[in-house]
Image 1 (cartoon, rainbow, N blue to C red):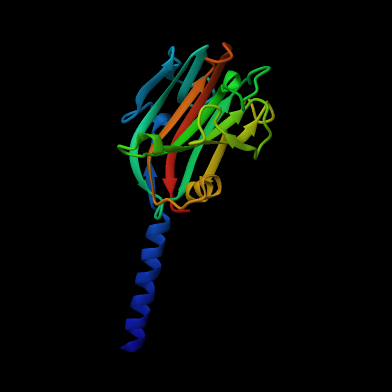
Image 2 (cartoon, rainbow, N blue to C red):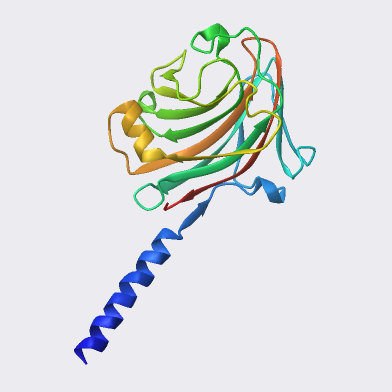
Length: 215
């Protein structure tokens, strides 16, 4: 009897652990042509977002010509359960002659934001910004040119991985601790943007599905 009870408890623990590690929070279904829950945010002009399959698969296509507008989704995600953000993206070209650490060069063919809201104290809102950099090396980090409350991390650089789909996977709790020096339990929004308002150039990109997972 004791053996049966112990065995049952072990199986219960294993099944509970397996269920937790399989947990997944879907943020976007762009591969299904669905952007339900995503809203536009314009800063200067309008980057055009639409679905197409010219990249070899159905995805969200972004086309910026001297413009800066993005899409965001407000969604509260418990990082204690699902700390890993996963997505895929693709670009064909980078921007020429831009210094992304300066306001005049704060343009990217593709970038992804993870936002922690400051609530009524909006000035306390902070964000991690993952970018496909035109010139900064992979792994470089810096303050956004306009605010230290946005910390930039270059995940891809230049044309090395261009013209093909690449996948990203980031532990948001770890990255937030590294860049802001504090632990967080929740994020409040995810956003994406292809923008060239400062340089006046053109950039295009494709974005695949986004989700949060336990591991």
